[in-house]
Image 1 (cartoon, each protein chain N blue to C red):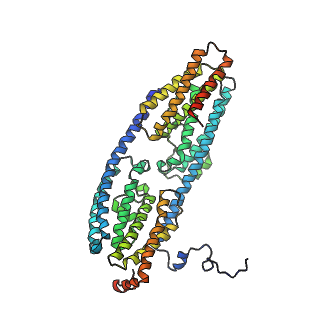
Image 2 (tube, each protein chain N blue to C red):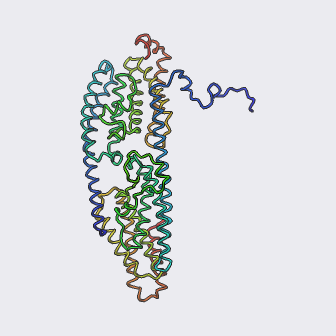
Image 3 (cartoon, rainbow over the protein chains, first blue to last red):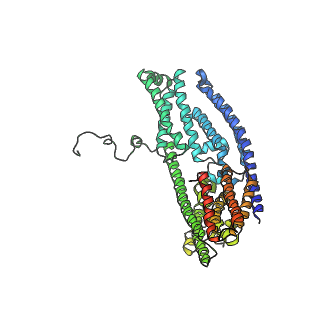
Length: 229
Length: 285
């Protein structure tokens, strides 16, 4: 092969790569749109009497996740199945966002931490790389950390809305989450940076709990709401 | 002193045990169990990444040494020796690449690509340099990858392998240099070829510069054809490539214009002064 023939073949390969990325970008855009819709929907729980609406919001969110699953199916077809990490950067951000949203819904429903497998199911993907388009563990952990920040905010707004028991439960949840994260040996990457933010979330919630306890409001809550979970 | 009465922070807690675990008389929660498994998964991933980084560094070092060796090649009698020695070195590099391939069995290569890419680029540079010296042509990426298909070398490797399939074929590992790594390696090759041009004049070889000029021009045309359709790192190399080509073209010009009037043994001086000036102008490190 002559030099020019070699470069022509290389250019073709690069061009093909670009085409694939273009297709992926389109689907990712659609996913980002759906994610924005879910986020807008769920943000409403921070508003005053929105707590009665929580179950309804969760239900609506789950319907939106149906759209996510369809879009994921489409995404899976855009590239060779064994080259997930070649194109991973394209959907990394939206996937982390979707993990957060799934985790938020599950927390609002059951006040537990959604597992990797559950998220994968909600999003219509696999939990294991071997089985196909999967959820990378670092993306799962990133999404969970975003949930922590959201719950810190929810703790604050719960108090404002007159719910004095929720912050106590959030506090227990976040502290356990923090213990879990402390087990991890992280490298100096974006996950590590995001994890560094967790201590501020923990602190914020501790302050809320403190504010409630010195005013005796937590006891009020315990009596009124039927005790902590 | 050691006899102090002051209670230390850790006295209440056995050394090394976390406070949280001590408070949990119950078995660890589902969440903690999950995170323990995440810890193992991440540790294992990071360890593999580190092993690959180390291999990549070894590959880089040995490839660079091969390039230095090849610069000592001339058409003098010891040239054959140098080529043979370079082959021995490159075989050693390929054995390292085989270890990379073995680490990547069952893995998605792209997950660890950043770890091994620098080494592979350096290898491409070295092997294509050797190929040019031998054949005066550019090695293809297919040819490179053909040499990166490995089989089990000895019985020890075969018995250590857990074969999931019972076919009669010997186990093989392979690594494919990606088009981008190939292009980046070839771009770096042009820098070495430029140096080869300068040194060949010093050796009294006035044919090589013209051959190199033509060869580099072909490569430059290739990169121009690719333009910006590749990733940014490829486009970035284009600038340096153009400079290498310019140096070689200027060398040819000097030889053409002044080659007949200057004795051969003085050519090198005229030549190197001019290129030194160019280097200084560009403020090269």
